[in-house]
Image (cartoon, rainbow over all chains, first blue to last red; front, side):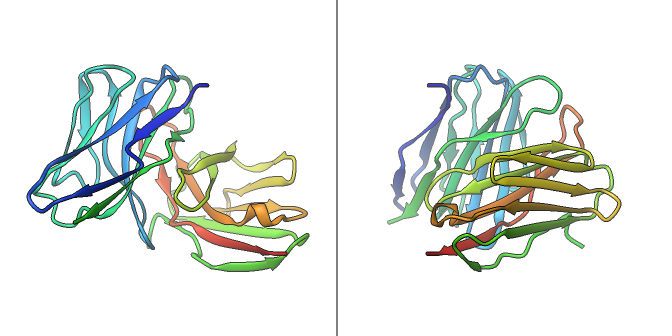
Amino acid sequence: DGGITQSPKYLFRKEGQNVTLSCEQNLNHDAMYWYRQDPGQGLRLIYYSQIVNDFQKGDIAEGYSVSREKKESFPLTVTSAQKNPTAFYLCASRGQGINQPQHFGDGTRLSIL
Amino acid sequence: QKEVEQDPGPLSVPEGAIVSLNCTYSNSAFQYFMWYRQYSRKGPELLMYTYSSGNKEDGRFTAQVDKSSKYISLFIRDSQPSDSATYLCAMNEGNRDDKIIFGKGTRLHILP
């Protein structure tokens, strides 16, 4: 089945530790996105990538980093510089063509130990 | 004024009722409008996708866009307990590099 796979489903981070969240898609989509979702705050864009080897900061990029070495993969690293990382992280992708909608994975819940 | 406003709820309705969910927006350049359904601890799932003004129907769901009033709605007919979820509206202008702007979501409870 075509879709977006995020792993792990749950992740725990110790103080001062970097952690990486995985996002893989087999939809052949060019564009990929990372969002953070907090209760009552909606979706906030962290980073996005329109094409391989290129990515742009979203609205809340500080404390996060990404890479886009392959079309199907867009991992997100939550660095120790992100002081409030506890949240639900969502990855999305979007196909080419006239204004295709975004499709989402099932998220990773990150918590601090 | 926020770009997209959506009442967070919760909205509780009895099973079988018609549900009306709404969003207002301020950017008159928005042309594409989406509704997503999100169950607890899951990612948002695309329900409806419309362009410009008018109505679009898909089964029990109808999406309505009124660009003159900058107001969009999602109607759910014959609501079921399985419709209990958070519903997010989303919209954008339609340029290649523009971002999709999401509402904060409305929590809906369908009471059996």
